[in-house]
Image 1 (tube, rainbow, N blue to C red):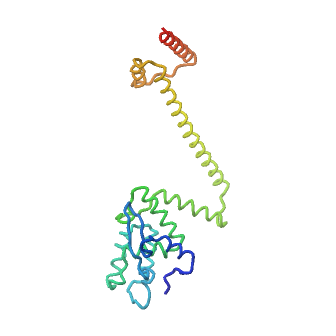
Image 2 (cartoon, helix red, strand yellow):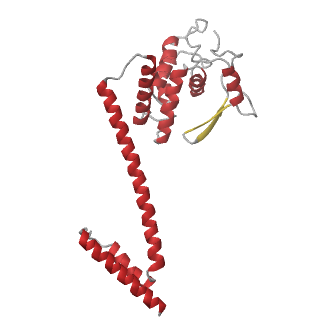
Image 3 (cartoon, rainbow, N blue to C red):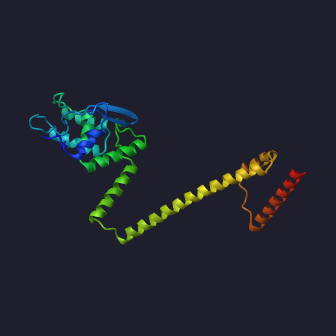
Length: 253
């Protein structure tokens, strides 16, 4: 049985080039914040678990179970914990380890399944879920589920397997409008913060330092003031203008 990888292919050459220069047989990856370096097995123990020459009890079950658990998705610890009872009668040289599962996942898992697993691991790490030893739980996050759903839906539409109904199309447009409004709102908040910084700078430059405590006292007041009417706003602006003129005269004197 072949190792599932044509050594003449560009995929094999890319894998070899991705290995550390110091030892082309070493796999190095960062998982849960730690760097792991390990030697890949000469033959994949997962792929070869059901070979007749080995005569392993439950070999085919274990092989299929590993792939299923990786997509379930379970942490490496949970995958090993699940298959260990099925390997009790196996010789040590045939038993599947973490290294066996990791190598199998990266080299022999079908490309679409590998893409899903890597996406799940990416979001799990974003959420602080350990992909190596998370116990008694899936490492699936809401973000990974949504991304997978969107990806599969898009692929189905491209293949022509599904066509959005009028109602679904309308909802898609409404959702896009919501996203646009949200983006505009975030832009407006950014502008308001920029304007606030400008106002603060003007206060620092134009208002004497001995009046700053009074300004802060008003800004930090517990009760929010009632918004003034248009006429009151005009009166306030006029008062501010008079105070600025008075300050200007005092500075000139």
